[in-house]
Picture 1 (cartoon, helix red, strand yellow):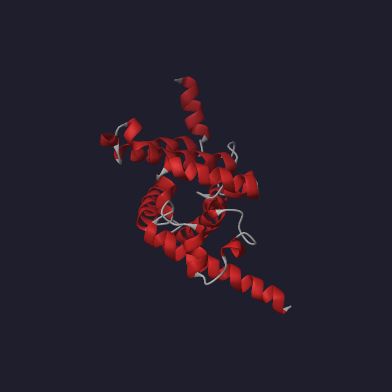
Picture 2 (picture 1 turned 45 degrees about the horizontal axis):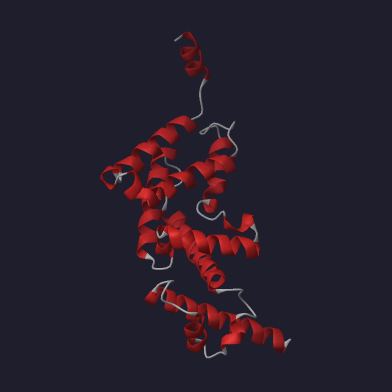
Length: 208
């Protein structure tokens, strides 16, 4: 019993040390030896809990991401129309990620893609669908209440939102002069396409 408690305490010390160093120095400039030193543990102890620095970083990223999404959801009025909700979610999510040193690594795609791949190999592919998972129930609610079309699975809607966020990491390739207006347009097009089509609209479209 005591051994298990001690094991969890050591893992938590590594978590705290890693979070502190990643926030202060960034992912690249933080080493496993620095993390264990700050946690007052032997370097070899690290590998009893994490397969690599990538593994620890991704665990911390997921935790910080979850906390951000929970904070956002507490401030959003979910009774407004979906378009305004999604627009606000996008803005708050982007601002929150750029303010957080750990979440900001998401925008360094060369580094983050490697971290993500390592984590997938350890935890499995389903463990990294994190960007908008917390909004999954909201999409289902819109579909069930007839606000949003229900012929597109909620998972696909999440993938669409994920794609829009990922585009934000490719500003230089697309043309930084188009941002943030490009994101606004994409959100508008997507939300218009996801609207529940009424029978009257279908009739009009057929006639036209």
